[in-house]
Figure 1 (cartoon, rainbow, N blue to C red):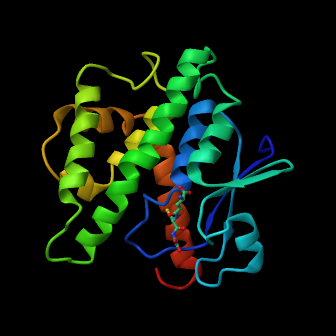
Figure 2 (figure 1 turned 120 degrees about the vertical axis):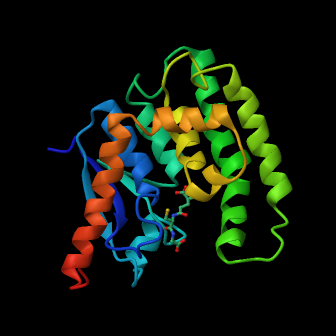
Length: 214
Ligand SMILES: N[C@@H](CCC(=O)N[C@@H](CS)C(=O)NCC(=O)O)C(=O)O
């Protein structure tokens, strides 16, 4: 049984992004909340019209929940969070704090960290985004220096998402931010994260076998 929740990811991806494909965010949230869910796939190599109907950019993840289909990992996380106090506290002020930090993770940190990372891995000589990234990461470090969790003095989906944005190895290895490092360490030691990440790795390893590549 799956509570009607289906998390969609690719049938296969190259080695590099494994463990980081964003379906891990949804798997992690579902694990934290104790939801039953299924994982289904859409082709990585031949992206169908049906895929673009459900994810307008031909990306993953997307989610189906009964009659509801939605994409964008942040939107999917908030959708799941509405169903579980574990992910989202119910007081208006705390809920507002979760919304704020979910959007901040995506629109103030990942908005810089992903293009920075892309320039790094493609070997750009001068990464012109480094100063901008450093500034964003420094502000997150200041926030995390005096609190364990972003909102409500306990784990919420905002921590999950911020940790997933910050845990990218190149970002983590860039600079020295002890509070952020301890935050990432703490969040990625959670059994729900470890299961979600390991399940994703197993999923893509099984795909190699199916393609005759293992
Ligand atoms: N804003 C989207 C980004 C999704 C995204 O970048 N997905 C990656 C996998 S983690 C993907 O599908 N990449 C393949 C592509 O862009 O063609 C979200 O948060 O869901």
